[in-house]
Amino acid sequence: MKKANPVVIGSFVIASLILFVVGVLVFSSGKLFTRTHILVAVFPGAVKGLRVG
Image (cartoon, rainbow, N blue to C red; front, side):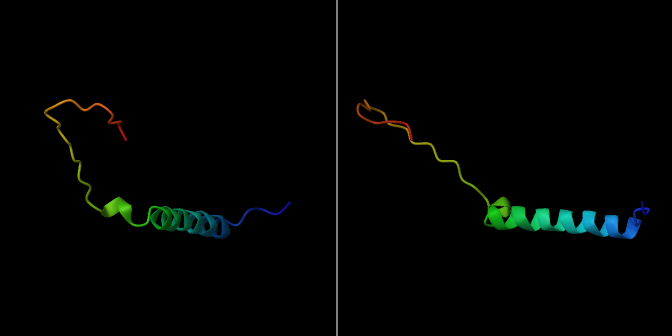
């Protein structure tokens, strides 16, 4: 059995990490670095018929 080449293993690991990071950025559609806003609506009266959603 041949001895493993550390350059090949290191290249594979680095390429895998880069591919993982690119995949996360692509599938998150760039939403990782955007600001989000939390909005709260307050109803002073009865809210019959409304559902959370």
